[in-house]
Length: 466
Image 1: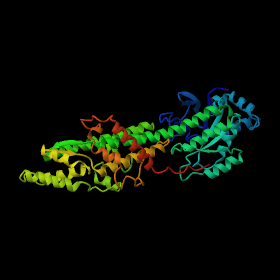
Image 2: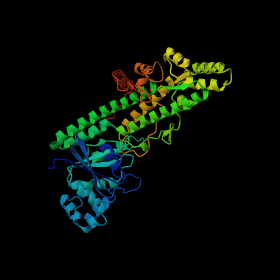
Image 3: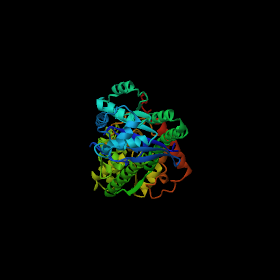
Image 4: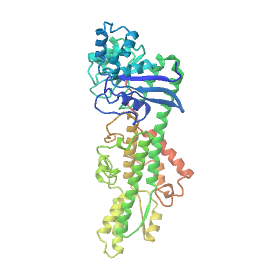
């Protein structure tokens, strides 16, 4: 017996074998996936590690296409098609195994040299005779075989039909594991089934299961911390500009650019955390264009899309703009009012009035994002983190997000750590004077906000039992 559990992933062509391996290994680049039949032409392998130690070797095999032909060949040679391992050996030694049935022979040789096989089934497909023939041929290898129903998250799956058929064939240890919609409990059930069948590997498989559960908890917390860090950076970000309308307009454009880029950095960090590519996320309502949000963060449509008010702070900004016009004897009337209103939309409430008046005395104005923008940032990034936690690495279609259903960040006061950040410009890496980024007070605010994001997260849907 090898010290490393050897698992052959087998099945008909285009049932999602490579996609399953991508999800189990958290590797979006493993193998090749496409709609064309027989995409995998050779056996490819990958290993699952725990603390740097290999626990399991998984082998992706070519798709079976002509198992019925192998059974016909056995009968034509006056051999019982159910003769067992001896019949399989004679077949593998025949010229046909290196010719017409070359792909099938690769599968059978790999299964024979493995400890167990995972027979991957596209649960959306009807139960046909060719699949029964495949199971018969695979049975000649005399290895434990676990049917894995893939794509069960699809509404048109035929899971009951498959379970009924497999039970009639004596295969009751059926696992559901979707390579597109990830389910931690589904993966743990798969490893548990392997553990129950392969007693010599109980200890390493137990370690793998514990590691996967720890990993899921760590990822959830790390994602919340990434979002919390972004919110503190942006909440405490300030930009001082002269009261001149043109300077204010240029300042607002610069502030918007800075905030957009900080949100994009958060998106990139979340994708990297969950081991996805940048191309794996292009939301329908909020498409990324040239690396930035298509439905802009500061666009009123984006606010309405998330059910947020856009008028917050605009009246204050308008009054300030009008005061500038009066001081300039009306020469900037209109432009100053418009600039002031827009600036008000960027300003947050609760900022120290004394500091603002002091800046006004020096002919400067402090620009910030408003509360509605912070709410929008929280909604978008929390929704993305949650979606990535449920995405399988075998998914090919780019992730699309709809309007989030939770209201925790739409109404009520902003969390205390965010409100506190408004009066601590030194907390923001986006400011020139970011002298308190590593301070104890910011660290405490980050920890508190991370906990609140975790507490506010809606519960994941219950995992369906097999």
